[in-house]
Image: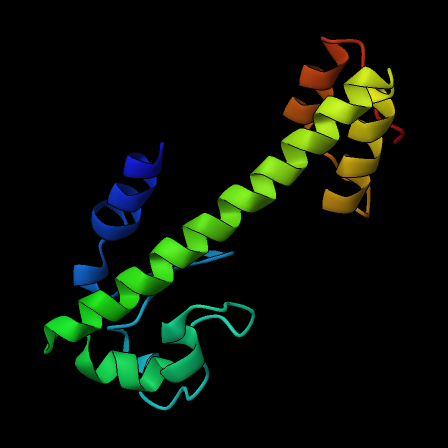
Length: 137
């Protein structure tokens, strides 16, 4: 799994093309909108790239200097590592809810966080209903 994560962060998401991973998908730092953006890629990220460099700086070097690719790779690997930790915590919570026989309640609370307005997509309602979990609508 570690090899897949490294490969995805360095090749599939392609820092060579100026792409940085963020919670909403990817930032293409080659775009001109970043010329005057003096914020880090992700203000919550603890990687050395986000601590030291702005999107404007990265924009200026990303297609000209190989160091731009290296800096984006540092961020992308750190981002994916943080996502793995989030998923591990989620899996632990799921496991604990199953052991306590509280999984349907866990799902209900989880869905309320994701969809506070309770406008659940129909496919989610149908999928959960197929395993006898009803969402409070």
